[in-house]
Image (cartoon, rainbow, N blue to C red):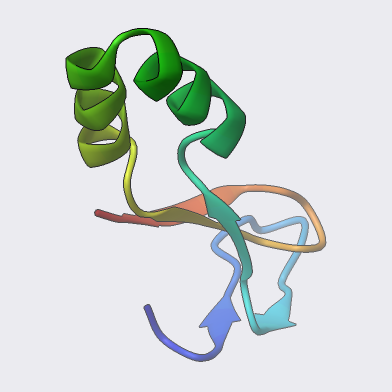
Amino acid sequence: MAKSIICPNPNCGYEGKPKKKARGSIIVGLVLCFFFLIPGLLYFIIKSGYRYYCPKCNLQLATDN
């Protein structure tokens, strides 16, 4: 993902760094691994990566898998 973005929302117009948020939950993954090893590992594989949001209007800009 680029270091700076220009928000495509016409009402926002933010220019700067996007907000980065993980796609999955570590707690859910650990609980699944504790009780069921294979589904827990699959959860971590499927939910790896990040989502990028505009910090001003919270519009989702991109995903990183």
